[in-house]
Image (cartoon, rainbow, N blue to C red; front, side):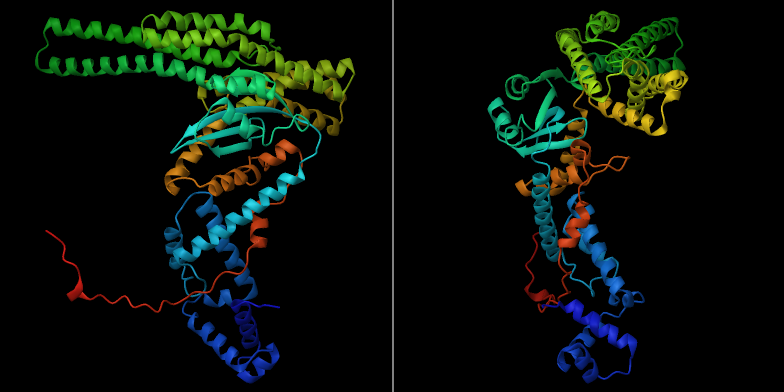
Length: 530
C-alpha cells in the first residue's frame, strides 16, 4: 500500500508526541520504515514548525481540516467565483501554510484542474441516475448571451435546472434543436410552455421541436417600453432640471419679470411631466399586476379570455403617452404588446388546464377541489409572488393579497376539517403547481449576468469550464429552502457535490523549494529607454 509523505510525517509525529525521548531506531522499527526515512521526516517536521499554530497541522484532525480548507477555497472561490490561482496562492501564504503544503500558483492550478475533472465525472454519474423515470412536465425558458461567441442557455424555469449551456457559432433553429435534442425525449419530459424573447428560431423550436406553447417574455415586453417611453421621460426630466437650475442662478443676479415668467412656465412643464411619469409607472405596474392567474384585489381566478379586457386600461394610457414621448419606438413597443396579448391569454389557459389535470390525480371529491381552487391556490400563489418580488410598490400589493387570501383560507370551514398532515400535503402540492406559472425568462437573464462576470474573470470559457459551471448550478447552488435545481426538478435527493469531490481528491501536495537563484545582476540588466 502506497503511503504519502504527509501520512508518514503524521506517523512520525504521533510517535514523537507520545514519547519525545524515543530513538530514531525505535520509531523506525515501530512504523516499519528505515532510520534514514525517520530522520528525513523528522527534519521535515522541524522545518515547518516555525509558527505557533504549526503543531495543529501535524495532528490527524488538523491535517484533515487543512485539506478541507484548501479544497474549499479552490472550489468556492477559484472555480465558482473565478478568482485566479495567484490570488489564492497569496491567501495561503498569508496564512503561513506555504511550509506545510504546496500552494504555488502552478500547484493550485493543477489541483483546480483535478477538481474540475471530478465535477464533470460527478455530473455524468448523476445524469444516469434519473434516466428512465416517469415523464416530467416542464416549463422551459431559452435565450442566448454574447461573449466571443453566443452561449445558448435552456433552463427549466420552475426548478432552475439548466439542460443546455453551450457555446455555438450561431443561434438558428437547426443549432438550437441540435443542442436540445441531446436531452429532450418525449418519453421523459413533457414540455408545456416555452418562454422566450420571441426570436423566430425559439418560436419554431417551441411549436415544431418541443411541441408546446410559445409564450412571450413579459420581461422583454416591459423592457421595450422602458427603453423607449421610459428613457424619453427621464431625458426630458433631466433637461428641465438643468434649465431650472440655470434660471435659478440667473435670478440671483437679475430678477427680471421675463426670467420669473420663464421659471414659472418651466415649473408648469415639470408638473405635467411628473404627472405623465406617474401615469407611465402606474400603467407598467398595472400590466404586471394583471397578468396573473388570480385577481390581485379579489383573489378570484382569472381565465385567459378575461385578460384582454383587463389589459385595455393600462395599454390605453400608454398609447396616449406614446403620442408625446418617443413616438416611433414606443408605439412599436405597444404594437408588440397588442400582438402578444393572445399568447399571454393562452399562457393562463394552459396553466389552468395543467392545474385541473394535476388536481384530478390528487382527488375526485368536488368539495376538496373547490376548496383548493378558490381558497388554497390564491394564497399559495400570492405568497410565492411576495417572496420573489423586490419592487416596493408591487411587493406591497402582493403582500396585501397574500394576507387577504390567507384570512379567507383560515376562515373556510373545510380548512378546519383537515389534519395537519393533510394540510401540509395540499400546501406542498399548491406551492409546486404555482411554480409552474412562469411568465418571464428572468432566471435565464440572471444566469447570463452570472456568466458575464465569470467570463471577464476567466478571460473566456473553455468547453470544460462551461460544463463545470452548469453542473455546479444544477447540483450545488441552493435556494433558501435548501434544495438544489436537480432536486426540485426530479423530486429526489442527490449526493452533495462538494463532499463527493473532496472524497475523491487525493492528498495535498507537499511544498517544494526551488533550486533556482533569483539574485539580481545589475551589470547585465537591460537598459530602459528614457
